[in-house]
Length: 309
Image 1: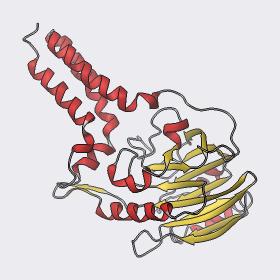
Image 2 (image 1 turned 30 degrees about the horizontal axis):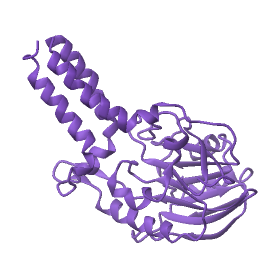
Image 3 (image 1 turned 135 degrees about the vertical axis):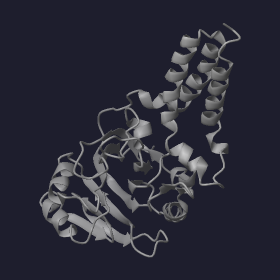
Image 4 (image 1 turned 90 degrees about the vertical axis):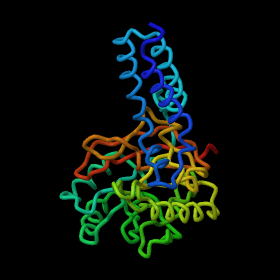
């Protein structure tokens, strides 16, 4: 039983190395490192498969080896499996990539507003749909601004509204100051360029990476201490290509959520590429909202502005 299952044991060790050393996988060829990091949580599915095969082979060697990837996966993602939600907070924010081809923008707007969010960010707004969203949200959110294909709706006044240049040649990011009762905060809304997986080119993300660096620079120069970033970053918190942004902010899902909070694709979510990230505020709870007619799930989070994170 010790000599059987050597191949399974080798596969288990290889899986452990991939997960533990994902940051060392180079991006030089097809952005393989970023592709691995995007779907890294799903590598854990291989553990029960290897475990089952080890039992079938009756291999003690394989059974012991399977412990390695199990330990690595729990070390990486075990914290996300616990419920860290709490009560309290003084501001609820939400974000949703509404999909430019959304067949029911009015219904989508009402669904997101039903979350009770004080501030809502919408991405991938088509010019034809903007008036529909404005009409549907006008009664609840008297303050709003649309910059290019992103928009911000708020129950509290917005000032210093401006587009943010993320080096695309058109506007897909914006910044505004929200004057909430507990204090002012800078709210950024961003929709980074899409990425594609192509056989001939791998994980094509160069434009996304360039925009992430530009967004990170804008946030680094933000004068306000309290910052919230809402949007579709087309990347996960594990993706090294977003380090310019993620190194400055923390995820509300990781700090105050329960589970992975996958947001895309809506029909069968496999990755959290939509994000609510904060700095200078304390995340209290974070959750995904029910599916709309978009291909993304909307996200919401409640934060405390009076406690420095």
